[in-house]
View 1 (tube, helix red, strand yellow):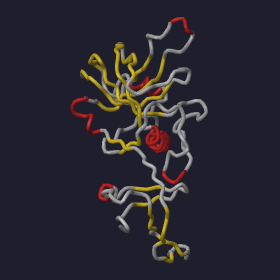
View 2 (tube, one colour):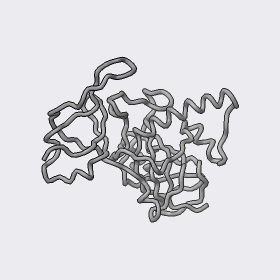
View 3 (cartoon, one colour):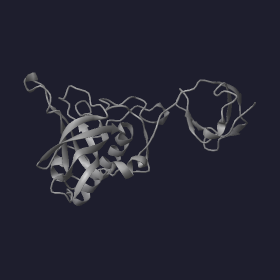
View 4 (cartoon, one colour):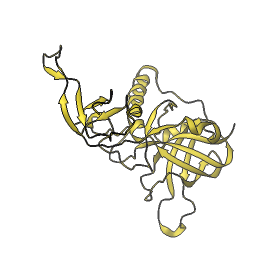
Length: 250
């Protein structure tokens, strides 16, 4: 089927020395075709957790049923490239990132837990990302195919790797109808003061006295419309996570 764009799970070639910038153009090779495409990278933190879960399920499936193979004749090459068969969730919220991350930060998960490298040798493999590939020329290719992103316009005699990343096509993407379906958010940081603690409760499992509510000041200006913040998650420097329930004071 002729496609104008796709979402792929990709991994940077570790010998490629340049950065992978979102919005940059790459030569994309799929099957026997190489065309130019604009590529956007995101989802490194979220896909790391998804890939770990996928790897555990895949290992269990291999033990029980033996190796499984994809429907696409071009999918086997993606298996050899170490690219997992992941499902893209259109309803998932992704933390905004500007470019491809060569390493995952320690704040990958809520609560300050350290990041997890997904599949393979942690010291050698680059983290997986989602990539939106918008072909400048439509191409015929099935989903699950292996794609290779290159910078073939770089200097031939530069003695540098021109293969930038490899990937597996997961979903078709149409810029006109699907752009609004991709969901992303940006973390905001505000500094305030805890002025009062809520009522104490005795926790049933260990008998400790805890407080589930805190009252803070100086987080927002007096004229701020708080309705847009009610229900949002907040995270402290210590890794405690809570929800804004209502405004307090005048």
